[in-house]
Length: 427
Ligand code: GLU
Image 1 (cartoon, rainbow, N blue to C red):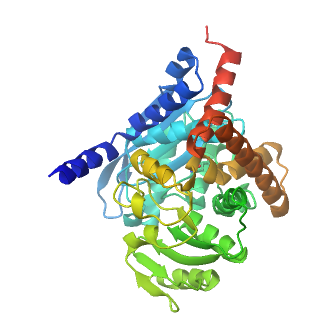
Image 2 (image 1 turned 60 degrees about the vertical axis):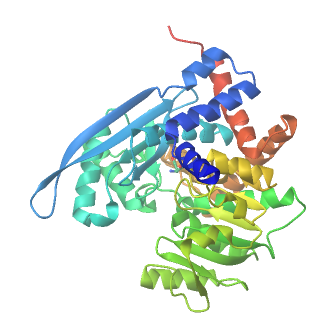
Image 3 (image 1 turned 45 degrees about the vertical axis):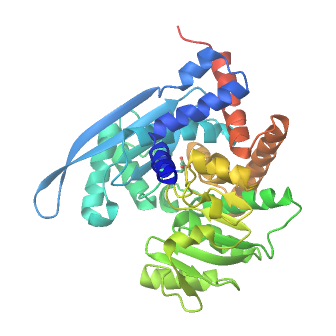
């Protein structure tokens, strides 16, 4: 009876409104760093939010209405930056929470942006290419008053990709009457995208894992790794782990998971996925129920799929000593407490997956200057920024005697607070 009651309670607490959860995180940090109450109040609200309902002509001749959002959380440190997600379950509170997360993320890696996020309620897998293009062009037109290279620069997120960014760039440019490459990042290289942007998030995950291991006197070669999600983040991270000499023992996607305790050949797994559309059935692996991926014995676990994956239901069974959050919000606050109590070293999303927005920043800088860098330059600068950010967050965690998530928020919110104080409140 009691256990059942606890379970129901936990389920309720874990399905809490994501924006309220973000505000709670802010309140915890505010108390810890004695944040000016006026600054705290400013940060509790998104600066502006736009909801748009718009029609799309479907292939069958019908007209369907779609709902989209674009939220600017805070612009004190620079133009708004953040991805656009296409997902059937996205909503305004999720987009608000993710915009807040971007404010913190950009400040943690100290790039001159504020935080934003966008979303369209749709299932891109169920739309034809023509429908997806029309939806994207109409959504761009609807949010056009908010975006622009000096105002707000969207990028890919869940369910969106470089092609969708190209349609956004083209639509915005048609409205402007001239080509504006700097209005989005994560574009194809042919139209002003950056070398290394596609791989940036996965590359960043591996870089911060290396730094996290270093704190325990360990190195990547020989470490066993499990990766949840084999999309843009998970597949690149798995490949780079494999190349660095780590043993990727398990990988999953929406269809299932595969295991090989001697290490999966990620290059071959990528070829298999390209051909079959899933990791499932990869020769040289055993099948694994998808929900067991998170609890396989390994040194490093990378949740790189959806949010709310590590919950009170599985946190206590996680055997990895290091959890590196490739996805945004994969760990619920309750599960985070369990991991902390069990001594698991968690590198939070705002640091672990910040490689993506960092190379987005490089892309925007290159577009603004019409002067492009080599992949080596991009990767070297990315390493520099992430290594510095990791070390600053680690120092904050030691100074404030707290976990890395709280420390990352201390560093990020601290920088935003300093900017708000310096600019003052208008008028
Ligand atoms: N959507 C990615 C994120 O959550 C990238 C954002 C960007 O590049 O602006 O960090």
